Amino acid sequence: MSHQILIVEDDVAMAQLLVEGLQRRGYVARAVHSAEPALAALAEHDYQAVITDVNMKGLNGLELCQRIVAEHPGVPVLVITAFGSMDTAIRAIRAGAYDFLTKPFELEAIALAIGRAVQHKELREEVKRLRDEVVSRKGVSQVLGESAPMRELIALINRVADSESAVLVTGERGTGKELVARSLHEASRRRAGPFISLNCSALSAAALEGELFGYAKGSAPNDSKTARPGAFVRAQGGTLFLDDIAEFPLELQPRLLKALTDRKVRPVGSEQEVPFDARLVTATSRDLEAMAEEDRFRPELHFAINVVNVHIPPVRMRGNDVLLLAQHFVRFFAEKSRKEVTGIASSAAEKLLAYGWPGNVLELQNVIERAVALTRYAQLTTADLPEKVLNPTPATNAAEADEAVLVPMDTIERQHILRVLRAVGGHRTQAAKVLGLDRKTLYRKLEGYGPAEVEAALRDAPPRTDA
Picture 1: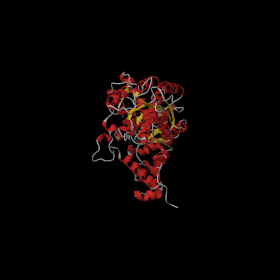
Picture 2 (picture 1 turned 90 degrees about the vertical axis):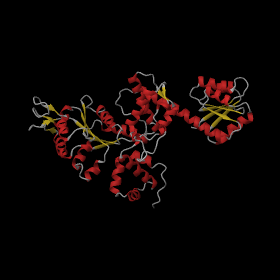
Picture 3 (picture 1 turned 60 degrees about the horizontal axis):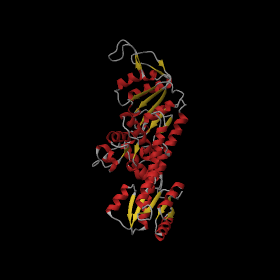
Picture 4 (picture 1 turned 30 degrees about the horizontal axis):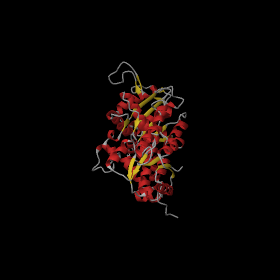
């Protein structure tokens, strides 16, 4: 739908010039010649922006601007006048004007200013909508997202939630893999049972073995009197989540595979097997298939845990979901710190949307927690955001980048592969040659990225030149 612009100009010829100029640039423009019909028009129709002259009979442009800001706070006002001065500019800004322009002006400059004003209005409305959306949601473990990749993810979670099949959650670090695992659990028939989480990279092989399979009486370190059930048994009737499964010790992988096959575990120090009834969900940011080909992960275990793959898109592929997540964190940390912070100013929202978020959701959470702690206002402003968000540097320049914006090698590889694929117009064979990969390896990596991310990377790609 074309954006509607209201022009308030007492010079009929100038008003007509503005109307025709904006219409040629795709806007729907209407002109009135004083403040009173302008206020009536705003009461009847939804305008995306208002252009007003300063010097008019009756209410002048600055007084009209004040009325519009008070009665229609979401509508940006642009003030133009032939009597431009610093004093007038200051009074216009104090009256709430979005921008200030002086005559004589180029129509192109007016069109650019209108474009910025319309974008500002839409962004404010989006921030408000997302704030209301967050307030209406209940529960802290829901997967948030309205972008196409996230709608696909949520639909997949709902489809596989009640299945008993093992699920492998993949995605870059910081994308929220445990959150997705919890959502799978809460949407399943096992929701009344426990959700047991274990990080495979946080424990030694011996400690992980005991935590997972349990200890017989007298076998647990520092406890010789009682038996200790392992995570499989503690997750009885629920879900067992193994994070960083790529770090699972190679020497223990046959035991894990046997437990999944037999649905029984043998505690450390025991000859007896104990049956369990738990669904397994695992997660990794690594390429397990490549690790299996390199004998760093058992292929048969990979098959057993990867019955259903749920891939989480990175934040940079999720569009305005950044603002939805940010508003969620604003509300969470404001309540936690007992501060009256309710939202995000549009200028700050623009910076959040422009940043690449190499650390994904965890980095966004950290930035918003910091901003809520620092802010002195009811809305987060650009002054509350860190320098890396305000003026981002290329995250791949390891020689110059700040430690806070460095990204994992997997992320750099993913970005480079998608950039090459886009450059060759989506021609996978040609991309494989450029990258020095065989086609099978490239296809596997692209499959791991997920169709939504690949399609997004190929938007506006140059046309393929193959016959």
